[in-house]
Image: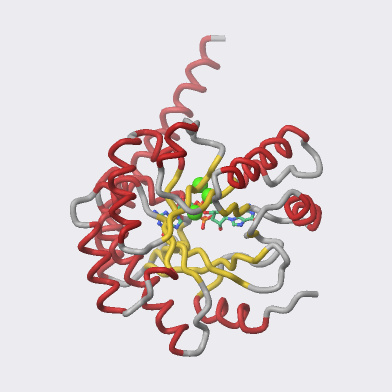
Length: 279
Ligand code: C2E
Ligand code: CA
Ligand code: CA
Ligand code: CA
């Protein structure tokens, strides 16, 4: 009926304007958040396929919002990308992750690789290379122990520009990984030309390993592609023993997911790495 339609409409528009208001508030709050030190990096362990040791960690940002508590990155990274705030935030992320890595290294934990997510606008910003060089100088971090994760969908949105920029990053000695691989429609022609070291199988293809043969086929295809192009392959979203078994049987190189650990605050992650033992 007519009145039902109107009711639905008003509910819909109310929800929409709430979403807008939330975005506007978060945009304003983001501006202060960095100065007020409200951000923290968590670190999620990455395990070698024989499960013998933790080979690296992925830095994942967390926002301790003064009123809203913990705001997940999916809620603010997109906004920060649209407003350009990701540039300052991204600079902070790189410095913070490198300082952490250097501090771990001074404490005797020197064989851990640090993976850092780079957002599209950050990759294209004029200041990126200088920012990275400055952080490398300041912290003394070995660029070989750094890896940047860049999403497949961003790379394929402007492949020529991205290839040029990735070559510059690569020339600093930093490793490169394609994040969310399988979701971004890679052209195989471009893949061959990208100066990358690793493919990261998107977690949407990992969750249903053991239940969905299509997802299994995609995971196997990505691993095969990595092997033929001489790239490392890591799987994210590993939650179950059967995921581990399947990925190991098919030659995946590294594993990351809740099966091993959630992302952890730095000190907890260091404890996890130090005490990690194969069962
Ligand atoms: P991503 O880069 O694909 O990161 C992986 C996400 O999957 C993380 O969510 C991680 O906590 C989650 N995850 C890891 N293992 C499992 C698992 O076994 N099961 C499930 N269900 N989830 C798992 P998080 O930390 O909420 O980050 C979400 C996204 O926000 C990231 O996706 C990335 O796109 C973005 N993000 C997070 N931190 C940063 C950052 O420092 N810089 C940039 N540019 N983006 C970031
Ligand atoms: Ca990532
Ligand atoms: Ca991912
Ligand atoms: Ca993602």
